[in-house]
Amino acid sequence: MDEIRLNSVATIQMHLFEPVYYTIQSCFMTFQFWNILSNTYEKNVAATKIYLIQRLYNLRMKELDSIQTHLNEYESINSQISAQGMMIQDKLKALLLMSSLPPSWENFVTSVCNASTTTIKHSEVTSSILSEDSQRKTFAHEFANDAFMVQSSADWPNNQGRSSS
Image (tube, rainbow, N blue to C red; front, side, top):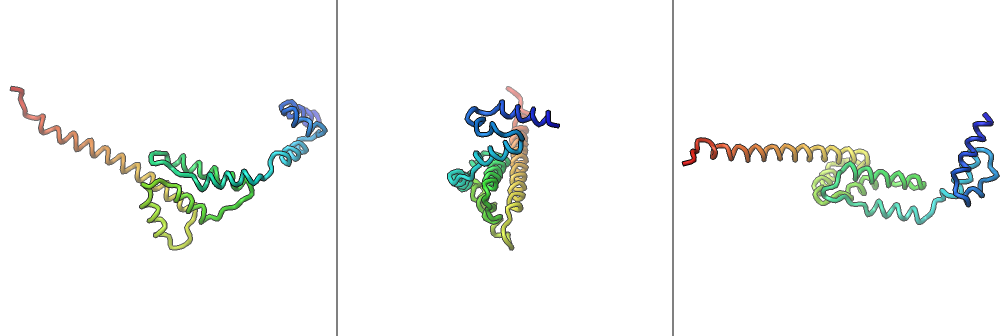
């Protein structure tokens, strides 16, 4: 067991930047490394918190962007904020998410806000957005197929029975 521990310590030491190495050179256990490195480099810096809050507040989905990509980015920022020790109320998360949607989603946002009899929940808003996106994609696909069928059938009688004289 000692040999494994020493090998892991040596491996960590080999891969550290020289100034960092000097801060932990006296450590002989991996948990000591972890404590010293996390205390040194994982500080809750106010600038980081401000940056993350600004990213969340200013996040806007463009009209033709993927809703799934947008939701992933939104959740990623929320996770980073939580990792900084800040908690955002569930209702505020839901409202920020809805406000980040593009103008074409305005009717959806209005209907969600009007339909809510209790407090708006982030998880419910997220599932409603995914459901709405799925319905929009289905409608767009059906509309495209119908438009193709209308175009094809409109051309059909004009071509039938004509002779080239």
